[in-house]
Length: 294
Image (cartoon, rainbow, N blue to C red; front, side, top):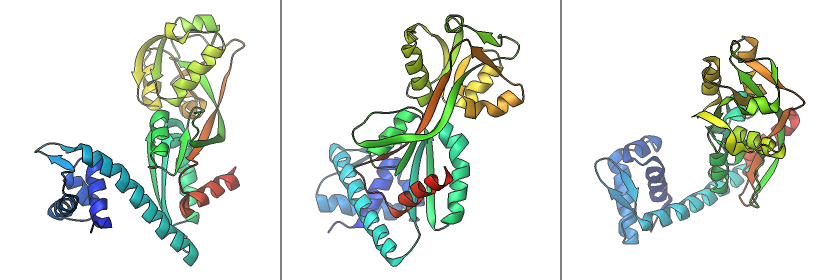
């Protein structure tokens, strides 16, 4: 018979691309993990993983089994958590995926407060761009997501979380305090990657103003807002960034806000979850906590 331990070992190896890392996560020895997967392959009578010295690669059968094993394990974990709820236990696991701005500047304080109320809940926060957060939610790898742009997907519930504003910043010595939108468009831009919520929202608002975003002179793409602020401070270009994320740099005079005549880039940060996935006790408790805090 196939057992849960075998599926857990296989999923851990598949996701970490390493028997060694999977063994550490499962508090097992590497030979023990290998033995679990070997027994699984023998029971199924098919190879699931191609092994070599450097890489762990799933076979076609392995890719299929990986998706099904994740669903089975998620159902089992949901059942255990439901039973715990019946027993009155306030515990469980909460996986949150967040884009950079909410993940780095908003959630740490909220998670700290939530953790004090629910010490039995194990918290995991993964920070990436908006596109990857949506992917995590759709795959059921995160219970709740926080994103920087409104995403339309029939499987997702998306609602406003907090208000923010995109502001234009430049080096204090190199740019004026105010300019027109047309003057702005002619400058060198440093922006986040294409799937960043900040960039998607900035482009969407420019398009609504009749600006062809393809004509923007993007001289550099960086993977974090902190890196962008540093690059702007160094005089490499200007950028559109979150007001929340830029507060400290503005206060210290490292960068300067450029006001755009008759234009503002108001936006929202969004809370999202998969409508088709079971919300465990930990996720429901966190959503209720957010309502109380707001």
